Length: 313
Image (cartoon, rainbow, N blue to C red; front, side, top):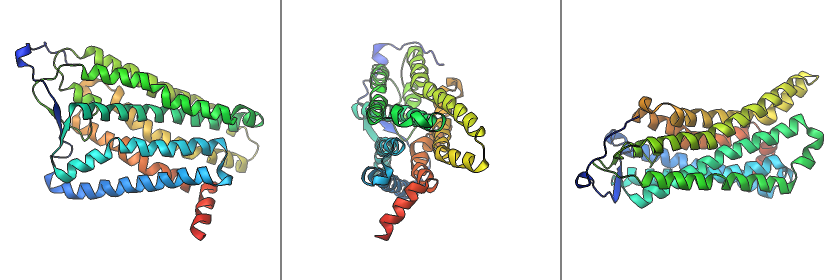
């Protein structure tokens, strides 16, 4: 961690805006990247929007699992919309400037939606745990009221943590360079622009990452250890395959999302490489949200049947 001496007030510049460098080091690829990310964004909106609509409208998809999936799809749309539109605008106009307020707002929404996604993935793992390990009690345990409470908790628990973290970061004095070497306002590159001692802020990043990422991830691991143990005790290979197919898609999504996010936020600060951070960020901000609907639809017979019904009309 860097502990710089706080400069005098004369050396401080009152920053009212930053510059998001994004992919400025690849000037010959700007239009290609704009087209690529625009296509990916449209795919994410259409695929997640389709899953959200069919899980709300089709009577065959009204179980708790699809209730959570509909909220997850809506959340994915919100999550990518916090970062990709600004990235597309910067690639299109090459202006790259973002006001301090806009940067803080983007960071708040990104952290809030990201924290909600971690918690909602934990809730979905708990749903699969109850369905497979306690099937007789499933309708009683996962009733509609409980499902609403779990989703509401996922959306609201992270708000005070996210608000406090964003306030702490943008209360820091910034001096010197205004350039954020990233394609959106993220914590590590912003802290690098801060003057003075950022030790407290870095500790808050670790604490919030543990609360909103590591704790849900450990709960998911605990749920799946019980699930796998239960599946292995089933009498036939066919029943084992059927049980595992109901949670394998969720497990793939968990590995993709948490893997890159945890590496980015929980590794030591002296090992942070700006270019590596950008690549890892693309995984959990762009690629994972694009793959999630495909994973859930292609590995889910009920969703495939409903989609076929809609296409055949």
